View 1 (cartoon, rainbow, N blue to C red):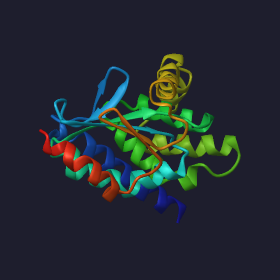
View 2: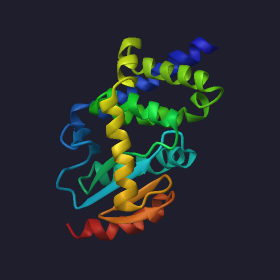
View 3: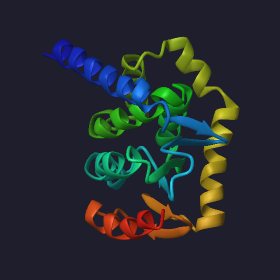
View 4: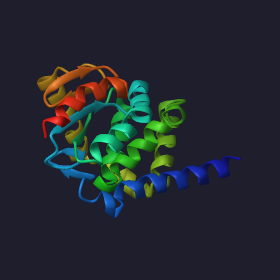
Length: 207
């Protein structure tokens, strides 16, 4: 049963990552802009920045219930540029976000999807057990053990993530996750798609 679960998860991981790097998505992302992981048309009338932590249950719920509809109805249609900014709430979230970044822009959002979807599994146990679970997921995503070791020891990658968090605290007064910044206006706490849609529709109409 465990082997079947792992092989199924590996297949899902591959499909998610492939979906984000497919040629049809090339124009709108995913890509790296400065230190930001971004998807969506560069000239989209709406810019939505999400500050999130990979160990945050509210962020995982947002990722599962809201992000797919935002992507389908706003990002893929050229109405919105989506920017993910790291705001790790603990060391394990920092480790996970480092691994996602080291996977590269093409696979970054796929890694986020899997890490969030499997959050209830890999965040169980002692810190050592959680790290083993996390590394197992990254391996299923195509990262080798030496690549993971190099990534987790990379001070530059860590500094980028911590700088994102400090910038969020300084510029947007981010204190918890998820926090959304829509065209410069801060919205705190998880919002439903319907609540976000009410905010986004008037902005998209100004295009």
